[in-house]
Length: 336
Picture 1 (cartoon, rainbow, N blue to C red):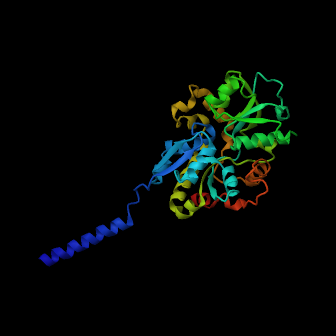
Picture 2: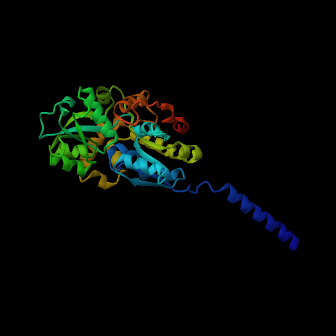
Picture 3: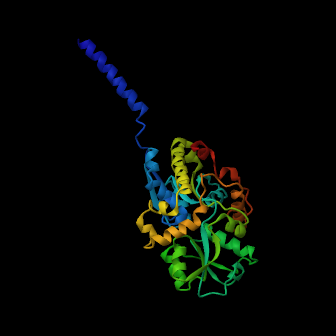
């Protein structure tokens, strides 16, 4: 009898061991931290929306979203290993390769920047980027995507290096204060900051990069912006986790594409409205076309980004950049 008990005990232990080795499908993976370059900005809306819709959890992921107002700082956190991914501008992938650092966009959230160049109503003399000469222009941060785009527009208008000054003023309240105090005469920012300044008649729109057509007119093509980018070495070592992340984001992009601005706004934290839900919805409705419908990198987009950075980024200028290593569509295609 004792031998029989021993035999069945051994079988039971083996089954337990096998179960532990296989693991339970519903168990969440280790926490994945993603830094967002200002998750209250509508351009980075997909990050918080994915969390709100429960798509991370549906994939069995434990994702922590961290907020960082400047994309450059988020990039540094990624390189330091403090976070595993960044929801920020794709052009960081190009810029970092010039420094020998390989990061790649694994899912593309935007096909255009979603940025707007605003002009203070105190300066009606500024009627085009050609009038930027001698002006102070607000950008998120020096070395940021908004900085490069601002300089590119000035250059296309015929201005030379040194004829404009870019001033790092962040976004939201700090940007608004800079306009009000005349620290900047114009500047590039996103929703909902744009709508707040338009509503109070403290600024007007000069260049709109929220739609495909207006972006093509201003920059010569689409300009992929917000993406989830990660270090290539981490992607290669964690393909299962990356695929699940991309699955979640692709579902979100389809949700955005098939739902109204009002329906999307209902899923967002109420404090993102900054006290004006109607304005938030109106702004989102006007710029919803800035998002990709499926997470795919828009054709020709990386080339436009490289063109801009090659002219205005000291890091990229004169460097050979392999664009094929700055993004991958493999995970998005697998999600389909």
